[in-house]
Image (cartoon, rainbow, N blue to C red):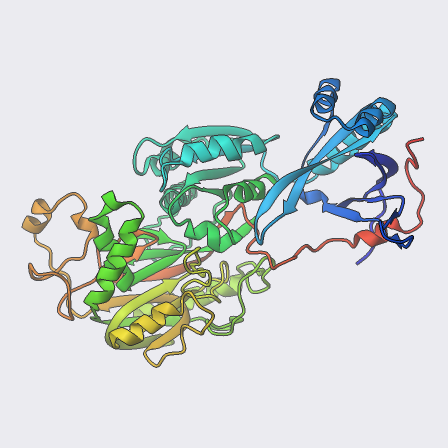
Length: 563
């Protein structure tokens, strides 16, 4: 890596120690100018050095006299008071630090100097470098679910998030009902004023933002999203997620934690992570978008049953999961899919999607568009699934399509540990009819380190498109619809009055936590349709920038000292 020239270099004071501070275009670094001695013995020890990427500096501000007076009243250290008197001018740099794995915090470091002009110069140059970071949002539209999964959305925003936004102009809106944010984005919001949209809530709140923003983008570009073969226009605004829900799977799978402060800092520094979106259709009629899990069978039954127990709160998922597992239902149908070709990686290669993932780095090309057109022609000309399509018929306990790992605190690996966020594919997981014990072994591997696909009854395919047809077509009369309760159109439709237990009935599809009204669906992956304020999950100690040691090489300093 070519060493960047110094922009500034000076000897300042940090606490009661003299430090040499160096700024380049990418790094701010400082180290003690003197070596400290160990208490036992006279052996000298190398002075500690610190380095911060400029792109991870949150804010720079000059400390006023009032700030320093309040600092003196809080501290009784004579050296600190003496330092403030000798070097009365100071500036503070707020920056990102990594604490626990994947968790970020905002830290401050204050530098003192005797010369006011020198202090002002540092503040000016640092802020100039921050202004060059064009990816940072200056204006945000924030939708807040005042309740959230734990009735904490508004409290999380006000206490933990809002104080961090030093520079961005925030327009906050409290949602008053379901789909409030979606409908406002689709019709009323003046999106030209904003650099991004942020949701404070759970996965359901994110889904509202996703549908509102994608629909608005297609309407503005006169694209009919109800056409399965339509080429959707990627959204220009990034989406931020401040987790305040029960599971926060999407945030956990894209950042590595469901910590609201970490997510807020990713928004502030302007991170950008592309993400695929699955568009779901029934008989060429648009149903929903999905970014995480499409599940039929087991997970569809769990969600359907849990909807009847919402009064239990998050515990309803555990109860419904046990009940569904004991029922051990299976369903017959035909799954057809278009395998991903010329794609790096497979669902079982253990190549996990991480920050800077080379599989997701590529931009969608014209070659990809031609392949999409060819696959559409093949699909129209051959409905049986030949011409590149694979067809599987059988009895399934679960059919899952994971567009990301779907990791969460309860399942750190997720349903498909090697799924990628932005490669234009989804991992199709088929769990055939098996014994209850075998299925339990499969579920158990979601929380341990064993290969969860290493079973004879489980197969997984990386696909660009798929469609599913249950064994029997759905028959719904007008009487059934008129007599059904409000949410019946999002529940499984059965040909008899009995519970859906075996092959003669249908399950339901869960689409990112919502129940689809149809069992027969078609799914297409829209490559990199949206972008998040995120950077993917960082590897442990992952921090790539200029080696700070090169900054200490002998080079003219500007200016050279505080003296």
